[in-house]
Image (tube, rainbow, N blue to C red):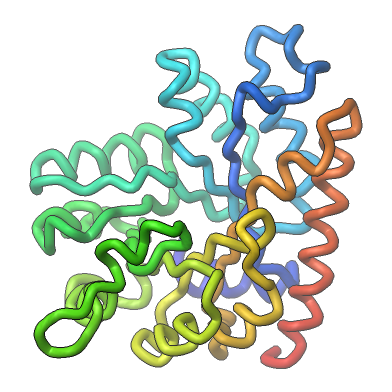
Length: 271
């Protein structure tokens, strides 16, 4: 998906919601346990209930890999039922030496046909470049994550007074342009998000942390929006587990609709 197509989808649906497809087998509704593939059935129902309110889906690969070959099969089946116009993100957090990275890229871009993959930047340019060589595909580089441990390394100050994550943002902009590279930026600190937006004014930002992790949608939107919107706000648990009963899909759809309604109101300010 091109940048212009992504922007068009956002303003057409008046949404920049990305639904994280992170199906924890231990949290799935009991009504699904009778199925041969409860992960797929859960995802299928969630997609059907939320597809009118979001513009992207982001499966977290850990929830599938932990189940072995069956989990990979569930992921493959899930990808088939995601509407073609959706932006799809493999939340894989890969990154290795060049030839290995290229095989990771082939896995997610060719075998599963994702539009984007999350990549760890800490092995440097040669570990990221192979992902950028695929036409029409995106790298979403980890910059500042929303977990507590982010402070252990990402916030460390380097000898020139900049934090490690700021160095990542500055250096990586020479690796890929605004039509090929996004950044993961956690939603738990709107002040830092605003500063990051100044550093990368035209790049899209994938923002986790809204909902279960405590991020405020309005605050992070006002801090991170640009004239193209420039944000994909990922929400997982508060949508997926809005209900644990037979109405789980309906409850997920209602939660997604609430977020889309709020996003539509925010987007009016830049449309």
